[in-house]
Image 1 (cartoon, protein in one colour):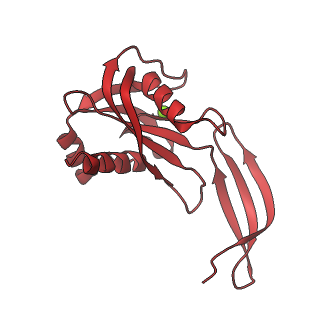
Image 2: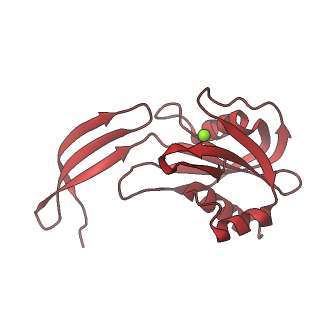
Length: 179
Ligand SMILES: [Mg+2]
């Protein structure tokens, strides 16, 4: 089966600082036309930081779209289109938690919202952590703190942690570490 949708027309309806929104007219496989509203985003890197006690370093942050505080893995968007996601991961870990990592390796890529966004998240596992000063962006109010790994798995099970990148990254890390 051919699923491809040919783009007939592209209209940028919003150009923002973090996202663009486009409305595309497409030709469906059956020849009919349809509209696709798409959020364009440069992508981001996410870090699963594990300290020498086996604890996860997570950040608390208010998220306006859902009007509540989320507990998440440290993460941030790429600075520019072709930035190496590894560089971004190292920077975001330092900015949001103050930690630097001796070892940092890619464990997963995810598409958090493929129905309406092209965003890709690059997830890294960071170990051998050394604590320093954090340096969040001016408009970011963030608290980083360590959590026991099992406590975090329970928070995922119970629905206290619902952020997609955090759930995916932590479950992947648990699988890799045989936890
Ligand atoms: Mg961030």
